[in-house]
Length: 118
Length: 359
Image (tube, rainbow over all chains, first blue to last red; front, side, top):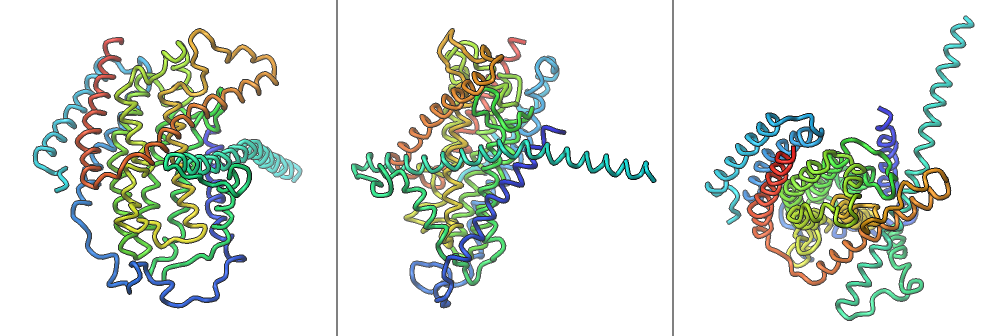
């Protein structure tokens, strides 16, 4: 447990390092001449039209959906990869079977065109 | 009653011990943070000088000798600038976004061994911690893009999230192949495993495909040209940073350079033998263990070697930034999903089979 102590301290210090600068400008920076146009969203000089949080391109959806599958798979592979000589041939080949299933899945997804961006 | 007092006293002693234990750790952490800050300032200066010489300009020259103080001057200016909050934005998310991006990258420095066994936390899951932490950064970018309530920021944030998600998998596959080769996820062990035959022992020779894939995906994770689509100036004004001003913009700037530094340090650690001098048959680490001053000297030499290797990669990525044009979004995603992912998976399978043969 003691090896995680520096992590906790470092986490606290990096929180401070990244949050303190947010408060520094307040004493120095002027905030006097605030008019509504200054605070509106920047759209190349013209008045902003509508809300920005509207519908967006469907092509952004498949990326996280496809990401969900390989990412936990890689995560589970780390405990398999690390211990030397503790996993025998059976362990290695079962992981190979797992990787094979994943490869078949991604090949199927590729053939069906889920990873096409057109 | 006396017993009770004694137990309270011993309890407070324990607390005091814990505090002292904490204080022991604060000094190296602060040193590390100071070093990181100086390195970032040097990188900003280097980038401006190199880009100037590529474009045959002069570059920064007025602030300090050779313009060395230019980055400090810029940072101070950003600190004193007004903090503009967009009127229709989500202010808490807007303020926290850049900090989250910075924190997640700062935490990666925990597991990077800078010198001979000189690392803040030598965890047995070192590289895994880095991968886990580095995937927090896109959340910060998405938060800032969403909360700005600006169309450019929103599409920039979406692009940033999609890009760093799709390049994270090839990157992780490469790291997995490395930890298979060295039988450990600890960064110190990975460097030690490469220390045997000078530069012939580098993982670069055993994992050439993995090295190239890692380099490309780390460039994409840093959102630098040719992969800087989230902040493409010609299409989206500045991507997710459009609405930011003052020190919050400065934090994004800091985060991008910190990210560059982290990835070049990780290229050094994973593929180029870290702190080792890397000349065959010469290894001076471990000889001077009896003497304390020699130990410090050894550590300094290790840090120097690591930083030299890392700055080589910084130079390469800065030159790439100023020579290559930007990709299109579909080209970017196709490169990630249809080229790098199968190649890195194949590389992993090759590595596994070679390990199986040697088993």
